Every structure is written in C-alpha cells, then in structure tokens.
Image 1: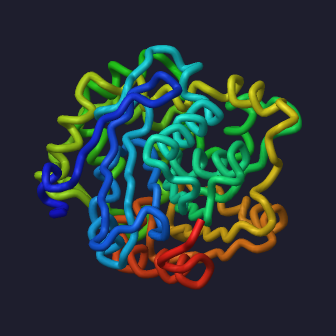
Image 2: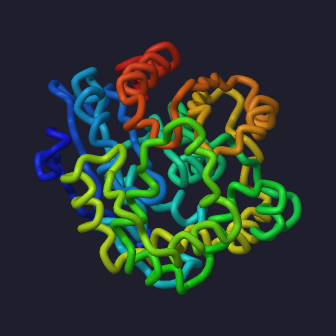
Length: 335
C-alpha cells in the first residue's frame, strides 16, 4: 500500500447485480473478521478516481478497518456508458448497494468527497439502512428539490458553480482532452493569497481560459509530477463519463419525485461534514441548511485549506475520521 505505487494496492474488478462492472480497491486489515470488522467505503469526486484516497487507505487499514475505494461509473476501470441518464444519484446508489451485496457487507461507513460526497449523501436517502455512519468532505448536504431548478438558475444564485455550465456541453469532452495536462494543473493548483478567488469557476471563465494561450507555468500543484502523469493516463480520451454527472440535473430531479426517497439522512445516523474554508467551489451558505436538516451533524471547518482535503490536510483527515467513527460506531461493530 504505497501511494507512489498504484499497483501495490489490492485491485478488483467485478460485475455487479445492476449489470455494471466496477473497479475498486479492497484492502483488508490484519485479523479481518467479516462478522465484526467495520468497513469504510470511499467514493471519489471530480476529476478523480480511486487514487484520490491513496494517502488514507493504509493508515485506516492499520487501524483495523477494511477500506473499499471505488472507481465511480465512468471513471478508471469501471464501466463508461455513453448516455448521461446512467449517472444519476439513484443509479449510482443502487450500484453501491450492489457492490456491498457482492462484498457481503450489510452495512458500512460511507465516505464521500465532492461528487462522491453528493452520491454518499444520496445513498443515505435511497438506502438508509445500509450505513453505520456518513462522512461528507467538501460538499454540505443538499436536500431533494421540491421544484425543478435548472443549472442555469442555480448558477445565478451561486456564481462559483458557473464552470458546471461549461461541463454540461458535449463539446467540453474534447476541449478538456486536448488540454488535459493544463486542466489538471488548474484543478490541483496550490492556491496562494487571493489566487483561490480566481474567476475560472464563474460562468464563461473556464472556456475563456482554455481559449487563451497558456503561459510557461508548469507547476503540478498538490500532485507530484508522477502523480500528475498517472492522472493523465487515467483520463486520456475518457472525459465523457466524468462530465456526464454534470448533465443529470433534470434526471436527478425526476427520480427524486419518487415518494420513497428520504428528505434527509435518518435521525440516528452519525454524520460528519468537513469543509475547507478556502474552497471556492463549496457552498458554505448551505451549512445552516445541513445543520437544520441533520441536527446530529458534526461540522469541521478547516482554516487555510481548499478543495482537496485528502491531500492538503491528509494527516487531519487520516486522524479525524477514525476518531469520529470510534466515538460513534467503534472500530469493530457487530451487525
């Protein structure tokens, strides 16, 4: 389990009962007991894949947890259907439940970052009895909408979501693939001073940036050059699946009109939310909504940290989440 050597982790690829094939890392602790050991199931965001959790897997396994880290649909070694309708939160939640069935896990601690955070919280609404605890990184809880609100209207309220309008366009696939290294250097850049307030997240910002000639800057930010290259190898000619999540606004609303979906995680579910205070894409105004809808939530706001919590403050993440689980679930839990 060496973060610098992706092949050192235990990789698996399995066909789920939902008919989709998923790649995931499945790391067992010493003296693993399927009847009592607690499993942490981690779901990555955009643009990421299982590798985004590379610095968390070994420390958590050494604490006695089984750690399962998926490549979400459309990413890495998992299936990559073409149509955006396959990428809705209900379908992904059903895939997660099917993966747990395959692994014979009645329940698990579900941990998500970014889009994975949204999917983890939706999993808590669609499959509430499958969670021991819920951990959300970077994205506050957003309840199912009572009325359809287009992405354009959402961006009017939250301008820092403007980049999502660009991601909705099919032409964005090739636009990013043509400048893949530049894109990942932008996404994983180290923010200094007020740089985190740059306009690329606002409407038209990313498209304008891509249209301009790139300067000599070649800093790979929070990634080493080797890590940067590994990301490029996984996303080359493969942006359609990752971007499809941004094309599901209408699909997600329609599936959540189903009366069976909960409006918030169940009241007895332990919930932890960790947000970097310097994250320009995080809707921190939603923290009050999270507190209202999930009264039991514990919220940590991390000073001087942006979006990539698992990299920027990995020691804190590696320690804080197990402490939360230990206090609320325990290292070993009989199911």
